[in-house]
Image 1 (cartoon, rainbow, N blue to C red):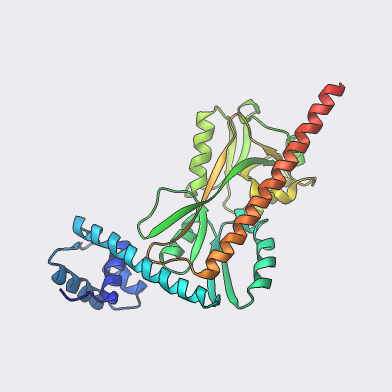
Image 2 (cartoon, rainbow, N blue to C red; image 1 turned 90 degrees about the vertical axis):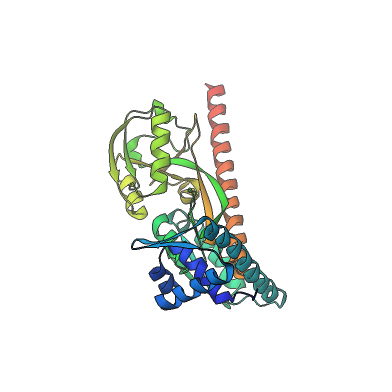
Length: 321
C-alpha cells in the first residue's frame, strides 16, 4: 500500500476534531471540496469508512476514531522531532502565543516576563488574557500554542497536563470584618454575600459543589466575570469572593483586601496546560512554562511562610493570655 501523504492525514485529523468538513477547511486554510477529497482518498486507501456524513456535520466511525488517535500520535512525534532538532541547534526563536486567565496575570506573570524577556529577547511573545471558554476555543483553533485553564473533563483535539493544584482563599474588604490571614470555616460564617463567576466558568461548578456539600449558606450572589472589577468591588463593600492563592499573594500585609485560608475542609482548584493534540510544545514554550511553574512554587512558599507566621503569633498570644 502506498504511503498516505501528510496533508491527507491532517485533513482527517481536522475533520475529526472540528466535526465538520467546513470548519476543518477553515482551520486548514483549504477548500471544503479539497478536505473532502483528502478524506475520501484516505478511505479508499484504507478500505474503510472513517466518517458518517450528515447535514449536521461529520461523526467519526469507530474505525475513524481509532485511525484519528493513531494519526494524532504520529503527527505529534514528527512535531517533537522537529522541535528537538531546533533545540539541539541552539535555536530558541520565533513566536510564542500564550493564553492565561486573570488568576495568573495579576501576580505570576510580571516576574516571569521580567526574567524570560531578558533571557530570550529573540522570542516574540503574544499573551492573551481571557477565561477558560475563550482560551480553550483559541487553542482548538490553533490561535494559541498553549493556555492555562481550570481542570476539566477534556475535549477532543486537546491534550492537558496538570500545572498546579492551588489553595482557594476567601477575599474580602475591611467592611466584611475578617481578620487578615485567619483561617475561616465557611460553614460557620454568617450567610455570605458573594461575588461568583458566571455559570459558564468551570470554577463556578466547583464552588457550588463545595457550598452544597459542606453547608455553606449564601445570602445573595452577584455574577461577575471581571477580575479587576470583582476585586475593586469587594475591597470597598461587605461582599466577599473566593479566589486561588496565586492571585492574591501581593495582598499579604496590605489593608485594602483581607485574605483568609479556607479550612475544614480546605478548598483547592486545579489548573492544567492545554495544547493541540497534534502539536508538541516548542522549546520556547517549554522554557516559559518551566519559569512559570517556578514562580507559582515561589508564591506557594510565600503563602506557607505567611500562614505559619500568623499561626505562630496567634498561638503566642493565646499562651500569653
